[in-house]
Length: 448
Ligand code: AMP
Ligand code: ZN
Image (cartoon, protein in one colour):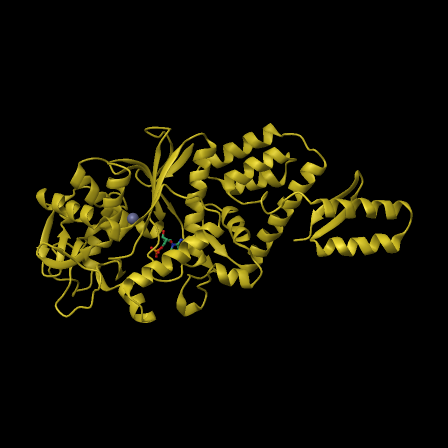
């Protein structure tokens, strides 16, 4: 497979260390509010990465984290903890907020038919490992303590700017004058925050003789080390993670353990809606429920996501989602037709589909091949597994009652009893089935 790698800024040949255990880590959600469709697009792309790797014969060990502490409103270690903010908004405890939004996230995750990872890792389950990581960094001389917390001194990591091609001089010049003035460098970041006197921070742990909590970036480094080991094969996230979060994960892990953190780093681009950023003020923060209210299923949305490229500009409109829904129905009906007409396997098309998805996950090209090829039921089963679309589960073969109705209708038509044939057609419509009379006989199709 060929994949784009942010580490080298090139498309590269992907060769895992061990094909029987390809280690993949995905930065997951901060569980303090309902994720929007843009967030779910990220999880759809990385689910497809996993499926494409499996399609190519690899076995995957994948971990996704759930951030339930330490992610502050601003990425610059300032402002409120997002979980505390959620708790105040909803008059609940932070633990209730975390549990509630984890449950909601997992429900949607399953509704989208995304593969279960080896583990969903909650940040608060790794506090000991996070403290050990801070200890290791401190032992190596990479941290310093200020009243606000323990900070990573990024000047101690010579390649800090490389991953995101950061211009540190410009960053310094552009920094607000009053930025946490005790920091030594503008790019330094908190690995551990101290609870300030009088600060209302429910989640806190006694470490370094004071109550405190981990910095956001720390959890991913600690979880990866514990669950997957020192070096993984692929690390994924959104483009927003490149300049801060992933840059900081690399600095922490590589300084503490002296090993490369990940061979490949992949990032998906952001989705816009009607040409605009997804934002509360624009009222376009749609979630899967909003789509359902307009008659679109999670699989309709998944098809919309996968008909574009993870690194491409993606602009969501309801008109395009309607086109994806039409494609979805069309594919289910082509599966229905494939077993009625006993279409034979199409190796050439399947090879082309494999080549497309192996070319930096070009699902759009694969979809075009699917649209233009005759495919057998077993080809469709493989396609269904590759994209996780539930096409076959959602399109069961018709039951005996429907089969009987279809043959009764044919009988009535032969006898020119059109009143009866129309009556049966209406019955079938109620069962979501329509009959199409084609040159090579009539076939049944789904209405929706
Ligand atoms: P968060 O819960 O805010 O940390 O975000 C969860 C994931 O969604 C991250 O991987 C982000 O990069 C990603 N993300 C956020 N907004 C968008 C968007 N508009 N389009 C695609 N991905 C997004
Ligand atoms: Zn992360």
